[in-house]
Length: 248
Image 1 (tube, rainbow, N blue to C red):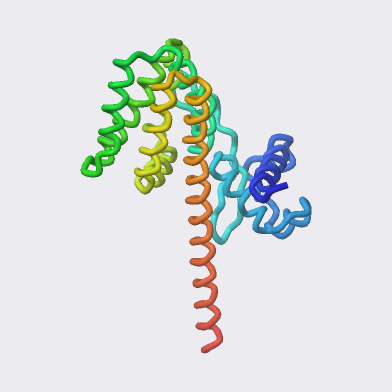
Image 2 (image 1 turned 120 degrees about the horizontal axis):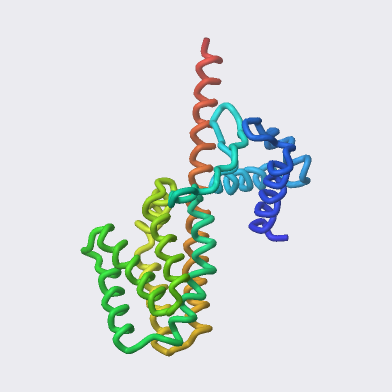
């Protein structure tokens, strides 16, 4: 099993133990070493699994204290948005928006293509603000949802964009990643548009799915970089404490 699939499998097993009550909400998870021995994997794999679980809102990693199980968030009511992670949202987008692109490829008109091309130009404008680029991106995806011709799919994608923009921790992750990947994002939207221009449902589905796959990987890399930075910070702090102690 690849390292990527391994940490995902371990995260699923830990989440299963949380759901079964072995690790109740509010309790501290066993340490990395104990979990590594329990599952027969490295401590690095345990750390990656915990990062993924924290991103999904199942645990909280508290520096110097431990890893704690969080209560499951109640279902959204009265139109409130659910508390989801950027990872959850992106995984859902890869499924829903890929199918919307496939449907749109069968319905798209020359006028639609021209409109999408204009949005792509706005999205690629190096002089545009992040807000303007984001709005062009949003309109590009919502236009495809509209072209798909299914009002349920269109509503779902509108709701996805509400979560993308209005949930603070989701917006923060997207903002951080998308600020640095403008060229890749523009190129990926161009591939999507080319498939729509060819009226190629399979190609449009694949292009949209690969767009979100690359975005998901970028989010994982950012999360791993944060974890490594925290480890380095803690190591430097411990080293300084040791040096101070030994000088006494």
